[in-house]
Image 1: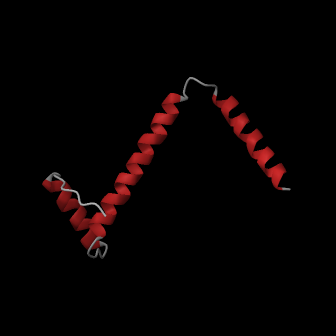
Image 2: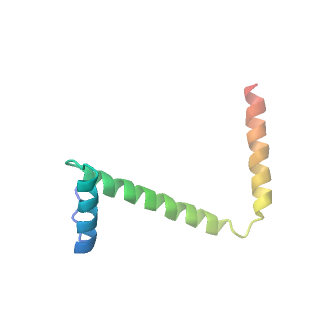
Image 3: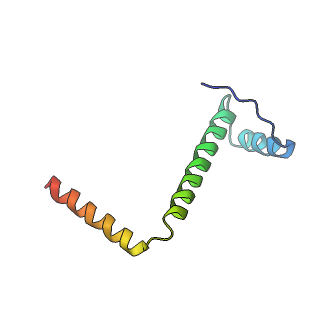
Length: 78
């Protein structure tokens, strides 16, 4: 585990602590909440970055290539 020292607005702190208390939060839930939020945000940013990188490509062509590869993989399993 790695420890972080974070500075966040007081309203954000109150909001998350109120939420966790209302939902039966236990010790360690704040860390789990932050971990999950960071992971989700990183995934969202990564997806956005990949979509932007491939936006100039024909989307239907990409879907067709994916379908072809999936079909080939399935045929190989049979």
